[in-house]
Image (cartoon, rainbow, N blue to C red; front, side):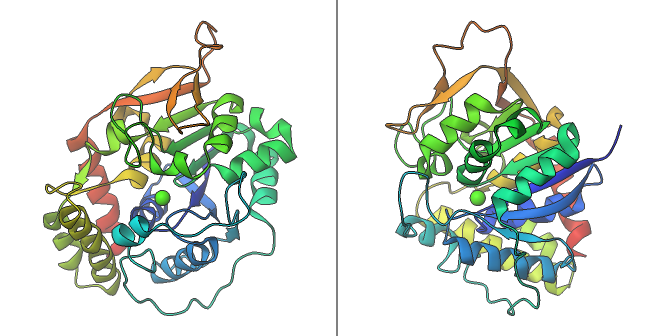
Length: 314
Ligand code: CA
């Protein structure tokens, strides 16, 4: 079996940074590019953050593509105050990193997704950890690719737990419910790693101290970035036990679904309230194209997560 090719679609905030580190560390996939999106921050900031982090990690050869600046149903985007409270004003915990030497690719995010789908088909794994605007736009520009991309594993949604924006709505889906609905319905194979499982997967300062103890610049930077997030979770009373590994869990599941239990369920997104639920018109379809992670083995995942991050930050 050919090694999987992975594309991350990041709105590069704190947990996206760890998704990037995990993707670089896993031996089960080659990271062939990172697409950027609005979400935790503006799309330009997301792209710059990705370039800075890639440089810090010595992986500037991974190309970065600029994606959507706003949702498919709006013509501008302002970063929400709550995003800045959780991720910092620069979205990476207000940690200053040098300006990157590299610049984003000239190809658009949509065209990169389309070309990669044709090139790698079943061997391509796309992991969006922000809004699904880029992927929906790519599906609409070239409808063939919805049936080509072997695996889309996204961070977003909430099936059996409350949302984190409203009691129904999770933040990534909330940014562009219409795009998300389109992707859920048209993807060949889509796995939803939502709040149901990411809120069961927490990191604490005990783990970030292990990065710090490596004595490397990379270890210190990632510890500073994630400690900002842990403090925000504590101070905003989101969770006092630690901060959720939302985005890196999606990357983990994308290459190894054994971390979670998957419920086969054809889904939709209620475009009015952003709720991720079963699609009544497709419930009885014996062919399932959506799978929802409903259980996670936290110790198993955390052990892998720490092995990978300690390796990449050494
Ligand atoms: Ca994200």
